[in-house]
Image (cartoon, rainbow, N blue to C red; front, side, top):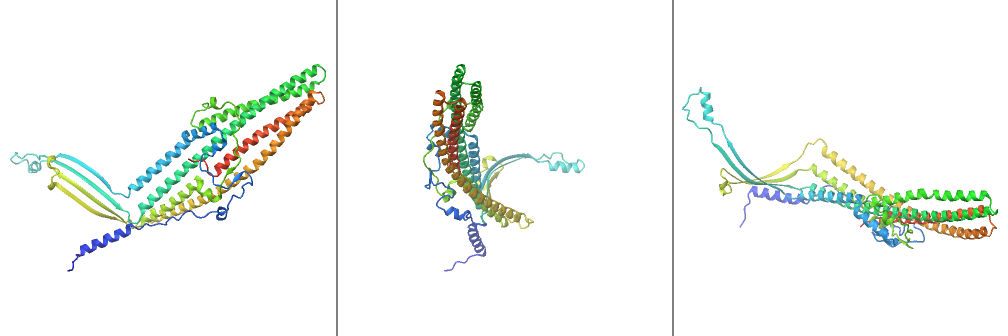
Length: 489
């Protein structure tokens, strides 16, 4: 037995098959990942400028590198900054905004529906009275005016744009990639913030240590001045010796003032970084403490791991993916858009009879819209999207190269500063031995005050250099962690 199909049935079937086929089509270029940048450097097992000692090629952990310094106060400051710093709150708000926009784009794939209801009451004019007036007022005069008209409606409207060519899907893809980029921006903010807090804390401890040293040196020089004054009274020292020592005491005391100022600035900087008002940390951090202890070795990984670890590279790559998806979203505007419109409703003159079956009405409309003549507007949008994609690609390339430069420079600085600190410590040890011998000779009267003064000045300078060198080495360690993209939560 054969089944006879009407032309309408065949046309409807073909249309349904075509729509199902087209719905799987997504126009625009597919994203296949970021282009390779510095391929040879990325394949290398180590960084070019990695020092031969003090670093390991093993991959480091992504966060909390500051705990390796063994300073509980620093740990607490970084944790407070990551929780309360306004810059982190800004990045978090932007991420929430992007995720909300992604939700909105995903909702565009689904039908839209709205319910409505209305109660209408009106009075129409008395047409018979108007007719009588136009005939000179003749008539029976008994015609009544039009009675009030009441109408009640309730309905449901729905519409659904079928994403035939994937324009909506491309917009969702672009929004998702943009949200991922802002997620990486938040991580990058955390990386920079942790490094900034650590640097400010190291500056504070460096300034406090140099202040303690300056005060100790001033006290020692004051004792030397008193001893020289006594020797002058006994005729074994000249006035010029006393004046030179007095001048050195005042010079050392004068150095205390800018150090106090720098300490106050560091305290205020740390307070603001942790989301508090200037002066809020004075009670907790004003007491002088030594610099944090530097770990014996640092894990740095390899260049390829840098691509996966640095948030700014991740953000640039996600923005490139988003820009690529935007091209497809604009190309879809070349093609027609098909929407399904529907309306279900009830209409009655009496609200008690509103939902009777006889008062029910429905409407279904397939709606085709095709902007066949836009005078190049869509083409301009596509060209603009392609240019934005190319710009994002160039920015990604710049970000990767800058990250490689940053990491190699940080490694080079860290390695050379380690060697420099060793030399400074050797100079300091030699200056201490020379100072001890000269003090003994001066007390025995076989050395002049000038000799002693020069020796003390040399020792003070060597001690200051050691403190500054160790602080700089710690800051180079911090910058190395930042260059490797470490510190995000």
